[in-house]
Image 1: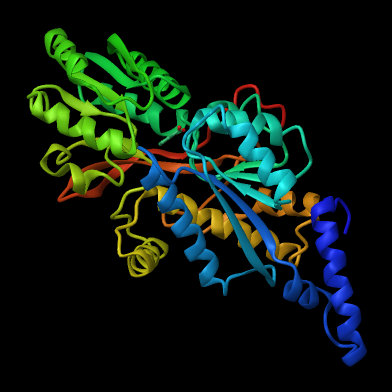
Image 2 (image 1 turned 30 degrees about the vertical axis):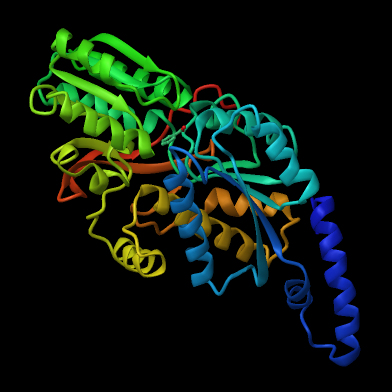
Length: 402
Ligand code: BEZ
């Protein structure tokens, strides 16, 4: 019971109290069984359930719960309690929401967020504490596994650099010489565009204009007119969720789709290709997942997710599912003792996740080392074209654990 947080210790004692009652009946009842019967592991969730990223938050949540349900709705033999807060994609509200989960709800883990700015705000609070353990199931903020990295912060998704750098390389490899970048003006967009630009220019290209739009605005018309007048060979872009669907449609409606090749990290088409219809068809992107990946874990996952939700899986669901797998492995390793923080961290550091995206493990900075794929939208599906970067590890600049 070393390193046990006060929250878990209280619940552990409550469980032990129940055990005292049970042992009067039978001296063969294992301690952990008694705890599992009385005190659930508490998972705080801070994800968007409204606005442009609502689809992302719902996909992550559904898939994480699905994975844990597949394990009998138990973590290390204990029941699970979820306490979810809608992040509303609000950076100013992030400290209050985080502190609420920690101090009012006494959670053992916090799963979240989607948005890079919120991730940095949360990491500044959680990284200064020993508990709870934070698992980032989407937000790519480079800083979270860079200067803000901490023993109790893990990510099951990607860093913003990871899918974007190979995207810039792809654009150069496909013979483009000039490009315009366009994205939302906040951490994710800024970092992804910088990584794509660096790779593109290393490959001999030149970024001639960088357009940044306030998040989560979607009035693209004037910017698309500017792109048309600049006539670059290619456009490199980050948008996601509802904003991405709108961008793809506006890009096609402006007559640019067949004239200026559109690239970007795969968030541009992920989960929205069906809604965008013809406007998304043929677009090539780079990401750590493709719908058609031919492995047993992916096939089983896609079928189970479809059955549970009625929807087609996407990368956000994969990240949620892997978050569930990581929690299962970690709590199994400590037999449900959510207060054994040091042992939990060790178990998460060595976990091998048999993921729908392909098997992956954590870097020293606690970020997935993973393949980045080239995909192309075909009939609304993210079809695998090849591997853009094998077992790519984020540089984790500024992380003291590396
Ligand atoms: C981010 O803010 O880090 C992010 C949001 C949506 C998709 C990808 C990254």
